[in-house]
Image 1 (cartoon, rainbow, N blue to C red):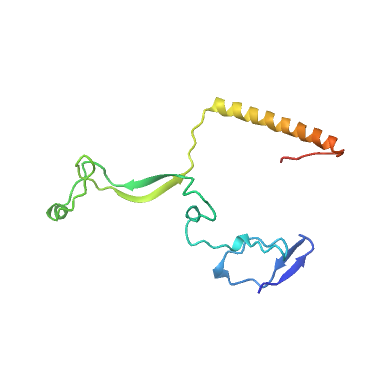
Image 2: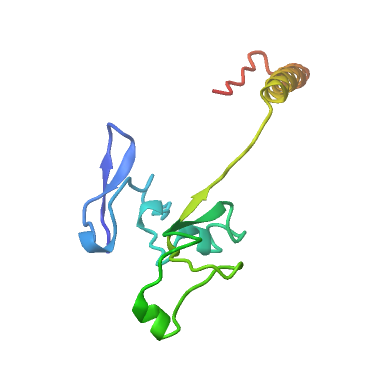
Length: 150
């Protein structure tokens, strides 16, 4: 059962009966003893992209197999010829390729001019939104309305 002690400097409740280290990496702390949001204690036995609770879509990544070996014209050992264990590719040539890993990334190809135009338009929309919010706040009686987007 975890116990909490109030840290007046940081204004948080710190846990002081910490569970065994082998259960989790103790990063962070609960905001207070009522939150019960121990984000640093969740353990998932699989890659996060395979856990539907974390990522409801199958995977956001482009995936490419990393291969090692020669794809065409590979030399074949006598033993492989004798046992008919010669691996061939689609064209019928001998291959020694093996999948040794997987590259995962989000790859985006974009036009620099279009991206610059998009960023300008985005800044204009945000500025318009801020002006509209200020007008709305003024009409509702808020004198000093300031929205810091940073």
